[in-house]
Image (cartoon, rainbow over all chains, first blue to last red; front, side):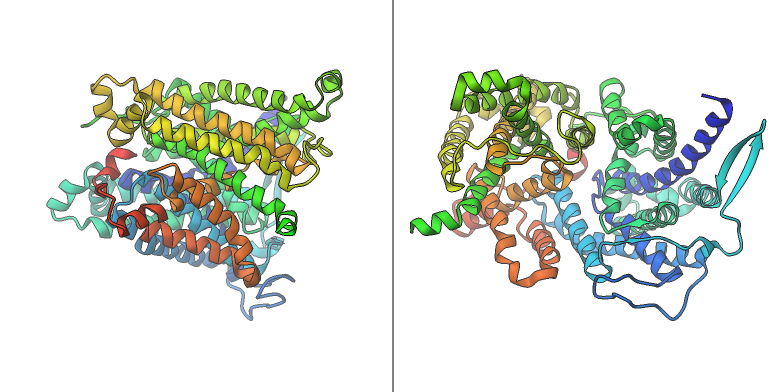
Length: 318
Length: 306
């Protein structure tokens, strides 16, 4: 592999890896507080993509209830992304309030299995509702959606071209910004301190006067926000490939958090970048196997270091 | 009456087949383990039957064995599933909690990508024209119904055996079981392997029944469908999964008049049952009739379980 190709792969890998990172962060936040995997996270990802598309472009295809509808306004991309993500966050909040909390309070019996299936059932509802509204077709963002930016910058390194797509640069910058913000929020604010207290031990946190339920709601909002942004960014880069396109990313995100370490925030980021890079370095001849890379990682991690790269060792409490 | 069976043969056999797949998920759950691997083993079993049934390499075998090739396929599927179950189960089941679920999701996805791209599995198109065991669809009941009966009997006996008690001990409290000298990893792997073998055999029986086999047979969606069968039917006895499997695979047929919104309704039914009948329908029924003394487990399980 020439050094130019290496550089190109690195760029591609870091860009997609940073999206995996913020997406996986959404899983990790919920896991660190409740010890559950929110399987509905993949659907939030899809939702974020559709919402942002609706706000920024607002032109629907030939299938579904909204067939042929064109919204009278189009918002700038940055604003659409923000509003889309906030709405996704609100849906995440509703999911907790209307589904997960009642289930927890009832204390169903294989709880792990119930929570998983509930999450997926929610995926079914959301995904099919989207399909009902706008059909299963592919929606792509028009190239001018970011304003007057060129679609790509071509660098020349020793005479050979290295292409940086504008989308990739935007994705990377947005992700960096979000990671910094989340990092700050969790590390340095009162909210973050309380959040970590709840994650450590909900009962003690509640005795110390922290309203645990409210923090769980807040976490679901944040998680939904991150999922929504990730979906919108992948959507602008590769197109919104039908209501089910979030499900694959949802599963891949699970591999990311296991690789990084369940419940570890830096782990989710590291895992995302590692998997993004590994996918970018899959040779073109074996491109079809790219989809399996993340899951192969998951197995290797389980064999060699089950707590993940940055995870804490499982404590066995009685 | 005969007409009814002829017309609905496919649906009736499918109900039994889905009940069996629900049971394949129930066995690991007897030991408290959430496995989503059934579609993977089901797909492997089907591919084994499809390849043995159509590939040139096996032509002399087919000529020599005649219809006995089918039991051979089932045996082969059982064997391969058992070996793979050990390979997947041992690393994942040394750990507690959610790891088995995640490993089995990865297992199903890897198999799906492989079967989409390998030549021997027919790529994205799959394998066509798999030789039939019977001509009439309904006749497949002759293999599926005995398998269901045998599995139920096995499950019933298992629950009352030493192994079944070990499963239950692990399910109620793994750490306590461990402390009492139950070899938890070994029993968890065993429970997982029983489910895997069952799913593999069902796959091998289903490939001739469906006539074609492709990568869509083993997907994450199917994992969740089977899980829903068990949870909605109830995961406390062998009857729950059977009931859930039959009910839920008939449900889309019953909802057909609702057309486009059918799948949304289907999802909503799952959400509502999960939240409001967490013990499943059979659990709710036995509570109504007053002979369930099972404690409802408190939410304290939440942090520890995962």
